[in-house]
Image 1 (tube, rainbow, N blue to C red):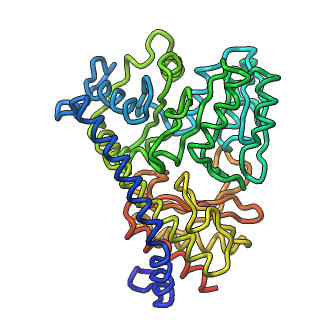
Image 2 (cartoon, helix red, strand yellow):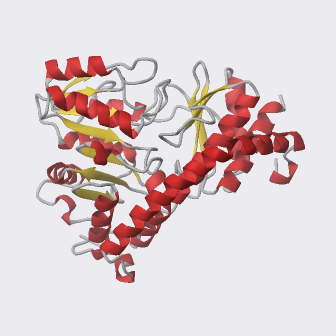
Image 3 (cartoon, rainbow, N blue to C red):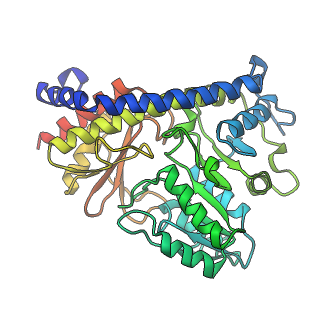
Length: 416
């Protein structure tokens, strides 16, 4: 339906929930302000100028914008070094490159929050038998399951002590799972737990969906590497593609060798005129992330009023932009996603249907009317077609458009 056709009853419900959410919205704005201060200081420290926005072609040698952006990124995220590249095809590519950077044949990778995000499982070798996976290269794998959706510190300590893993993977967001997102404080505690018994373990954080939801990042509490996607939070809705890795200098260099080739690393890679979008996206990222967090909180509040279970709850502090809703039936999930799609600025006329999406074990339905294909910082909703029919909503470039999309989805679902 058109925005003007959203029923008054749904609008009244949104207004009621906004009143209740006022204190949470103020807290979200405060985080955005502090993160923006950090971004501004980094831009100023490294003298970002118009000349940084010119792109390069071919090999991309001496790309001022690319080299300056790496420095700015490292400063913003409290890291020794950063690698920000449009050559990363998605977040999985960046995270896998970070993991490979810390491992050699015969080493062991420990996952601290249960099974990692679906698309990483093939890269690790948990599922499938892909050429070039970690298992293909003789890297062992062990996972520590969660307790009530959170970290099992005792088991993490015991496994780290016994295995002495070369690397430990910490997934910050919930993914397609019942686990909850980790706070930065919890990530720091996991790292301290591991390092207390296995100080040589490189702690790697899958930071997707979590950037700028707090005033600190995992690299500021001991993470050796963090990695993520530019078409999520840190791209601010403007980055057209790409990913990033930040952390210890030696490990970032190793990851660059994985992205390109040993001996070249991060020294090559043309930017093809994208520097302006990457700089401007990072500049916008704290504010844009705040818009997404407000949209998620409103969605949770409205659906709680309607009797649905949400995670996190509307008034809870958020550690990623993902809102999980238990929609209970396949028809509810389909209708909700169709409502999000119909309430989008792009492809609003398209009707999403479940399909066998590469890298996922179940059929997935995905609503994503975005300016950038697959952009999770733009309003989208998806979920695997399996019980209890979780919907995972994320994004919203502006709160106003996010609010309209959520109201449209709820109206569509209530029409049953």
